[in-house]
Length: 385
Image (cartoon, rainbow, N blue to C red; front, side):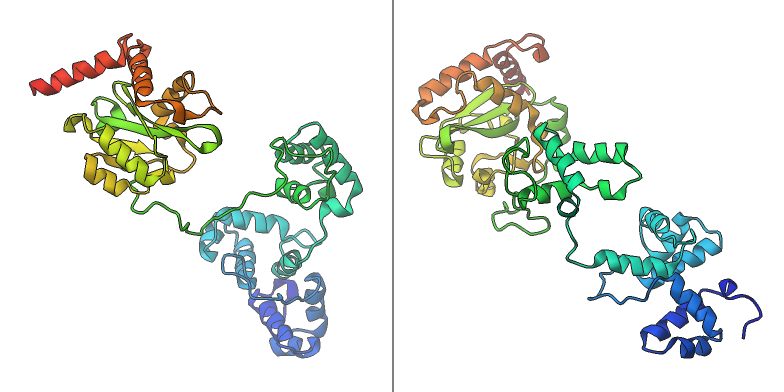
């Protein structure tokens, strides 16, 4: 038997004890095998709460029993959580959280108790908080009726009732309860009026992804600095029910606008043909780059590059500010082409007229010159080179 109390033993001893217990050995036999008394083994077993086995293998991204033992050894040795995190190969935030919630009833970190608690938390199905707690459900219903968002509700609960775990929840719990009908359907609703979850495709490659996209971050420096004409931003403005569209091109340096007539529709082949035909009058020196969003209408961008000479770059998803000049211009164009109207009724002559008006309007960013003046000056400079 050891000459020092069981709580001073190295962690490898209780580790061996629990491995033997999980292997089916009785408590007394396991204690004898590792060299401690039966009562010492019983103390370890009681402090661990109980000994649980996971229902299915645990993914490597989660802490294992050995990881928790390494954390406990590091704490006994006086190492910081950041150093321990490097030893177990996890982020230091993970280790900080583990130490905080892995303390046993005596207030000290207990790797076996913590591991059992983690297994308990993983068990499914769990009762919904909003289903078993009427007070919490009433509170959430009332706040949703007042047009609070789930994020605002959960932050308010965390701030006003920090010491009541039963009255705290995360925004996802509110969303799930709304979509599953656990809340008042007639009065409690999201401000977006959405009643079903939007489909998510995180990590799943889309069959409709545009091939060989060139990201906007690789665009030439000249385009970023707006010191050279010929670097354009493009997009579509859509008509009623998305049945009609007009293409818009804006030069980043001069703010010169070109409108693309799309009488045959705005799918990829039609846009390819229209862009090729309606930018053919531009000198090659003014067809340097074109930045677009990731709309499917530019699926044939490689063919457009071959036919026009543009080098086409794509913005990041949901990042309209990466082509902000075009977004601003589209807002100006809505004065001529209001939302919800049929854009197919506008002829090419109409588009040229609007284009001319916009390009002859002075801009403060250009020193109160017009985009047409700025483009003419740049064209003259190119002619003299």
